[in-house]
Length: 463
Image (cartoon, rainbow, N blue to C red; front, side, top):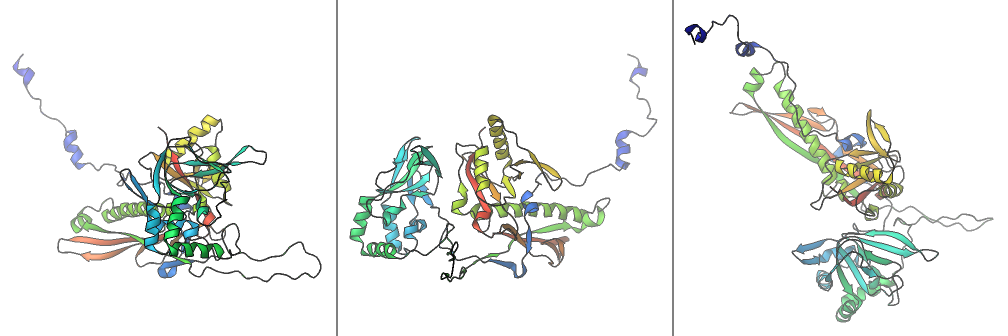
């Protein structure tokens, strides 16, 4: 090797590394992975809510509570929460906490394997059964003696509540058979009779409830409107009036807030070619809208999953969501406008459709093609939770004021409003040269009548 071979040749032009320091790159605005389609916010009709509250007036209804029982679980020890026993129709007005505790203590815990018959059609009702965990199919007897499916009971449901009021000769009108491993709490007739013999309060309460005339009501539990039809001549017509709920529910607007801070040095020196404050605010608003949709689904006060009427809760026939399950979900209400499901639930439904040899059509929603069933769009919503046992829920809803559906609530015209129902208010600059903005969005949702919203619960997602 010669000396000339190792000589460093002089650089004749500007190097790329140095040139890059003076180059202005083509760049995107800041990206955010957590942005989802937020279909719920897009399909809900938003109703202006002045005064921060919205009252839903309904006809008088005789149904109280959500009809679903809750349990306390400590290891293998499962107990019904005493106050939850008032969800049983015969015990709705029982207000004695000590008596409810005594009743709760008399329920025994039993475990059953799939296929076990808890009740037999035609046998005497001798037990009250509370379903703490698992699924139970109810099978009746058809007109010609064959079996007929009467639906499924699952977590929080109950069977045999007639034991409290009906005469001893009352019989089961269906066979209840476990379809999964079940944990059931059982109260026997003997145990109930022993408590009634000891407690004059319980005995008097049940006698009073049994002797009361049942108010005239329609199949939905609303006060009946007396009508006459098919008559001729000058028959006496019934008089009536439409009674209203004396304590209607009010929905107050909820809020999601955060304080956005931007250093003045950043906004002063690095605002070209993109306004740093605008970009910070844009991404903050995206995060608030994501939280807003999460709350509209999951909030225990006004969230849709917690405001489904007990009679509108369905369970899949087998496990994963099938076309039959979606058919039943849609036919339970008039004018269903949208199905909301986790993307994994939509994929599971697609697999079941493929197994059945059916292929769902697509629907056009706001210029985008989405999967549909029976003409109702199936919209993905990743805010619907997936439980630890790999199950989830599918919501169906009717929307709008005109159709007595589900509506979104918000108030517009806020000070420093950036988007409808969302504002960003300047809070000043502190001694650390940080500029602060209070970013807030106000919202809620209301279900105008119970059948506007339905849910398919315990949907298995598979692999």
